[in-house]
Image 1 (tube, helix red, strand yellow):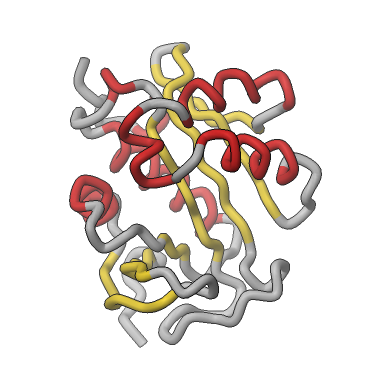
Image 2 (cartoon, rainbow, N blue to C red):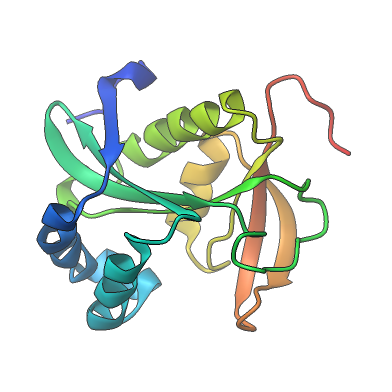
Length: 174
């Protein structure tokens, strides 16, 4: 199953409590577990974040089939210090593809490009994503989705990340 060229092919809807068993199943897959960590801990965080006003959580479907999760947030809401090179008001994103047969088919780049486009259209000056620098598959997908690597940093927890930024089309780099 190949990814379609049209971003409209992806349906994104708010995550609800009814989606927690699905998200839990996805967190247990080897690829998601490798990068997101302990499924019990992550499932508890997702459940808690459902009631957080600073977190927007989404289930992504293609062809009527849910296959991915993405959350977006304003780091200022969480009291996180801004990363150098990221304009104030930017949105952060954390995604994963939960259905293993949807990996490596271009879906990640396509739905993330569409989601970032929505956030930029809603007024975010930029969108950032911060994968583990060893997650080559994700980094390739993010690059295809229009994210530009700004370099490695330490996140607030002290973990190494590769900060990647997506700006509105046509905007020059600061």
